[in-house]
Image (cartoon, rainbow, N blue to C red; front, side, top):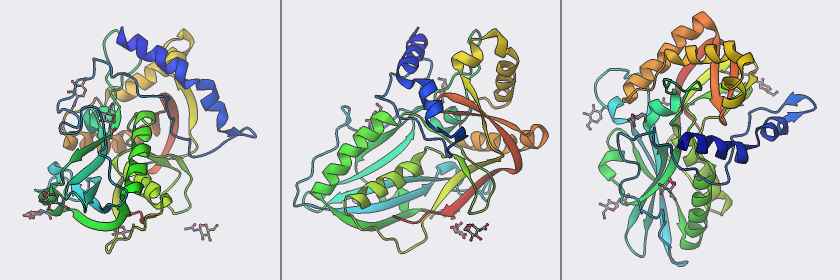
Length: 331
Ligand SMILES: *[C@@H]1O[C@H](CO)[C@@H](O)[C@H](O)[C@H]1NC(C)=O
Ligand SMILES: *[C@@H]1O[C@H](CO)[C@@H](O)[C@H](O)[C@H]1NC(C)=O
Ligand SMILES: *[C@@H]1O[C@H](CO)[C@@H](O)[C@H](O)[C@H]1NC(C)=O
Ligand SMILES: *[C@@H]1O[C@H](CO)[C@@H](O)[C@H](O)[C@H]1NC(C)=O
Ligand SMILES: *[C@@H]1O[C@H](CO)[C@@H](O)[C@H](O)[C@H]1NC(C)=O
Ligand SMILES: *[C@@H]1O[C@H](CO)[C@@H](O)[C@H](O)[C@H]1NC(C)=O
């Protein structure tokens, strides 16, 4: 029943036709397709059950502490390998990193960590559940910001990065906090993949990912807009998970694809595509599945991307899938 409510919510708030039409310019689509913002974050469907609680030490009312205008707040760039990728040589060649931002108040001596991540882990944001009796694939793909007191220096320093990249005033911090809360209410779902035309610098980006590192980049841009100067002594590299394809085609949403008899064969193709990639509990299994996508794509050259709660067909081409760790400079 909650699912029906959620769908009704999407229908009233998404106005799908508008979304689709708004980036058709002179009959040509504007790329990348803008990430859809919502009026507010909907309740999570009870089918989605987190194995690990989201943001366990954050404020239960999602408050961010207020800083005095006169305070000077240090800003830290935080990055660490996802723990499964820290030790051992399994998948050791991949840099699967998690990114966050740290803040430290000069006046109170307190420090804080701010990050954005999946409510139900990477597997659930990358692949949907095929539920008996529910024709559309079911996604537990919400992601959100988490702000909590403390910086775990050891966690970030060991095989990772803890670097002071700038200072802001209490005022700038409070402005950023307001923006974070709005961003958190309106940007509700995680997107693993960046889809683009080829690996070159001039490639057309079809879809941007929406993940922990994108949140960090948005926050840095916001801070820089507010007047902060951010600099790093080292190269600032981030994990990206790419799909390579020709121009994508819009297919439809749950209702148009899975609610109409005339779309039966497309509906079957999409379910069949995701049948091979059910969500996993561990990140290693998810990454192995992402690599398996490669095998499947070489054969089938088709990917059904779920973006803005709509499906798109991607005519895949070499090198199909890549996990990179590449430089994205501070603003
Ligand atoms: C992914 O979602 C399923 C369905 O709700 C849930 O059972 C599972 O615990 C979730 N996985 C993680 C790692 O949270
Ligand atoms: C973001 O939204 C989630 C889900 O509602 C909430 O748990 C979290 O506290 C919010 N984070 C911030 C920084 O407001
Ligand atoms: C954050 O605060 C803790 C506790 O006072 C301290 O151990 C740690 O070094 C601080 N980290 C940073 C980056 O300021
Ligand atoms: C990570 O750090 C630990 C302890 O400092 C070290 O033993 C290990 O070799 C490091 N791993 C990598 C991949 O650098
Ligand atoms: C990218 O585009 C610029 C400007 O059009 C051009 O000068 C450059 O050679 C291109 N680079 C590649 C790798 O295609
Ligand atoms: C960081 O990114 C740059 C450019 O994207 C790349 O040349 C370099 O090898 C990357 N560093 C690591 C450690 O992968």
